[in-house]
Image (tube, rainbow, N blue to C red; front, side):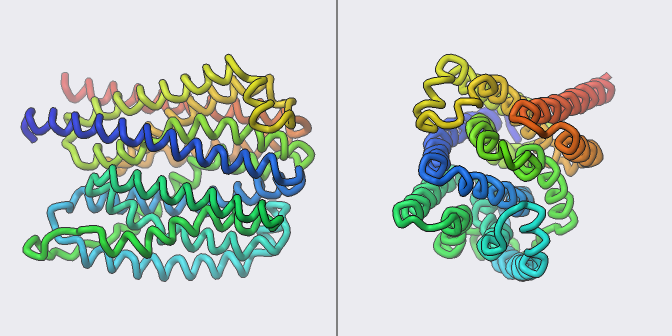
Length: 409
């Protein structure tokens, strides 16, 4: 890669980041309104159930992150090849996996419902969410791998609007939370149906080398994202049911910070996968800086207008979360930066983090087993978890810096 191409690539990268941030703000705002709308219009018990279901949704959507990342890397590595057969083959193979896993989810639905403390009737929509999570990331993986960032962002806007419409319809017609659950998967499934066939995958004159999904990498990516998403997923399931609604409200406010901070993660992965090793350090530094500044900026707004935000968002409900919001926002920023660093390790197929993430899940589970009586207990548990993850990430960064310096000396 020549320097001129590199700087042109940097300009494109920064432009893609800007577009993604602007769209991300809009998408996150709509998602924020969606969840706030549910919080304000559902009974406290139903909102608690939705948060428990949302914890499962986050878990079953983890394969989507792994599959999307694997396809992004594969397409980026082979973007000058004809990828049409790869697109068809990956859709069929992942469709078979989706059917199998969804069936297993239904078979063990009673046990899952008992563990999550939700009614059995929500197992079917959750199994559909699992099905969609496995096959719906295919078009997004292709678009990221081909660096079609503007197209991808447009799709995300459309999906989010449709999700909001479905939630509004459910509340307006006094339905249960089945439709809000399905709103997390149906828009993405429509993208698969109506967008994937039109994704341009290379001229037929290009190489027709057979390209397959690297399923070993997918499994390792799945384990990584499963463990990496556990901190803000298991808490909604493990938290004391008596404070689940209020903790769900606090978690909702915190997730605004988290999702805003990792908005550019897909763009970062696409850029890292498409460039040479010597240029990746700068890309990572830019990405981490933007991620941290985004989270801290939102946390500063929380600090300045904490009570007003709670009053407006929850119509005076859940005022008990006020003392925790700012620190929780900072903690979610730390978590988001850690997430970005671990994502960057995946480009070089490094999985040294998996062992630590297993210990982190064990730590979180243990904390909630012995300290889970109040909202403050749940808050402190999460602070310990996020701080532990960030400490590990710092050690990893120090290790790679020393390793790089050793090679250069």
